[in-house]
Image (cartoon, rainbow, N blue to C red):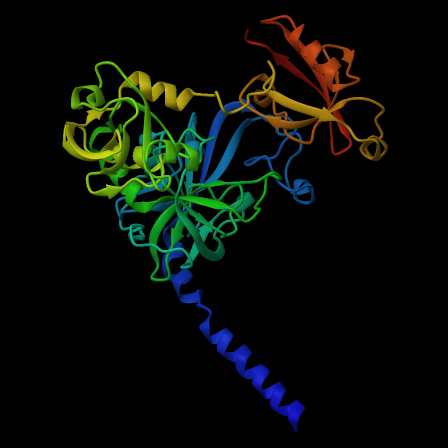
Length: 454
């Protein structure tokens, strides 16, 4: 009798737990018709690769043409924001594309026009020639709280209309290794996002879009539990400017800032680390004109608390240029209030931000990072020398389809015996001359022709 009561009690607990979980079926039926698959065709070649994202598991590679010679497409996701064919996606999905194809949920396909793009927010606004299309309903990310359920729909690895769910892990995340670093307060979730989900919508339980999936943190190329989405409130501000002007302007102060740790905060008379410490004031900037000084700590901007230094660019960037802003500043251990006119982020600053590479490795002259091939891998791959490609960045190697996991055995008709030897060989390659590289992938060797531009 006692065991039976325990069993009944456990069933009751399980039933209550099951009942507490959200039901996504109706939500997905409602919103999925407005989610699209985007294929962007660029000019580079992917001789040994599959179409789309490069981090496809080896098991799935057999489903694609290993000998593809045509310009390599990149797959991503997007969603329709109005019945007349406006579509929102990530800039990195369509950047540099010669042709953009949009596949609708009903299998129709249309070529898309780029209305405008914005690298700093990683957003792109597209337009297809259609009417009466299903479109998403916009929500707000402002009141989103950690712990709330969210749903993502997209095309990971080309599998269209895949649905994943999870919770909001945090808000206001800065990703310092990205060009979006200081201008997007990312939403962090544990929703399973993989290559191909980029640009797809993140929904709340009401079926409203509250974010655009943009980045994942990964050491493997696949999902590891950390996904980042652009808040929809930020995206809509960008959309308005892209529709009206085709470009996005941002507020600008003209200061260099840093965060405060406990010791630094104590040295400035603070009882805890807070605010953005000004380490530099640029000449002829709004900050200089408004009276900001090196050593000032901005703790509030237009009524918004600046707790972390990374909060300041988020707030300033979303402030309308030429508007007046009120700042709460700590100077010499005293709170003071300053008023200044916010400027527009200059073109030279924009180029610096979008093209910066100081904290992002670019590999060697070929644009790759290699590592030694382990003994077990040599035996498995039936090779006795070579190096394995660990990372691929923009450069000659990526242009010819080299990807992580490839084993390079010869370079410019010379055997590659070690990482050190390979790096020396790369540095000695002649510029503006085609050189050969022998690559082994999935046990199949092939020669590629690369040409260094420098």
